[in-house]
Length: 121
Image (cartoon, rainbow, N blue to C red; front, side, top):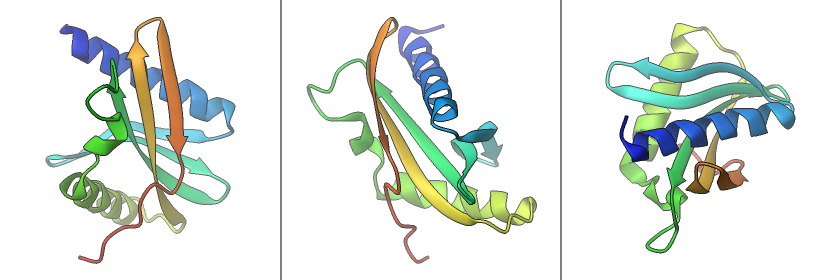
């Protein structure tokens, strides 16, 4: 497996562990609908939370969360809408980003709750 894939998997596992410690119930990981994917889906305080995980070895050029651009947001929202409809979810949705910088062995994590509001489509 390529180094960047290993770092991505480690970052996602760190995110799951972190969220569980904060009281989140993880219900899906890497949920795929067609070409759309949501990294983590969780329940927290009566909300369904769709979480995008971005992991980078450094933030010299840009912070990982900066990779969540308008197109990525649109795709996350489309996937979340599909998930809610397919599973008949009746909870308020929220969109978070987990930003991770570092390498396997040491990673700094930042959880950005309510990172964006879904755009009107």
